Image (tube, rainbow, N blue to C red; front, side, top):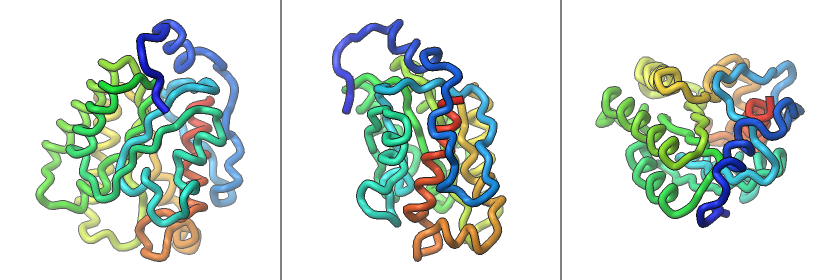
Length: 229
């Protein structure tokens, strides 16, 4: 799934930032609730067919709540023609993902890294906002040093988080980190929070926490639309 070796840096940059500009991959949001629109995503890179993408994160990336092949990275690959490597690991905090991210970036070359983060950090009182923000900054720096573009994906909305204020704070921390580092952010939480209770339930698995197959399909469509705009 990774492109090894040197490669042509000019081609890699063109593939992500310029090639196929104006083509709207995944503009069909039929997997999402009626009326869903693609959110505006500042600093969104362009994604060319055949680009190599690393999707890293926790259970939302691994695809918990859906069958194999129904995770959002698999859906995104089908929508865009990109080669998407799923490096999701359930239950992981951002600090753990950062360690794995550095190893993956050292071992292979990617055009784009999609980092879904903050859900488990928000649920773990041992993770301070300051530590989380620093981890985000370090991850973005590592992605840039590897010559890849970055797209952050924030937390899902779900019924009755154990500490709503802390959950909201960590959602804000992801947005603040994206703005501070001038990288793209897919605002998943805002999109899901706008759905009514019945719609949200239809997009979540039976545990009322993880997304289900339709939820992941919608997430993939939103990401694809952002990358193809």
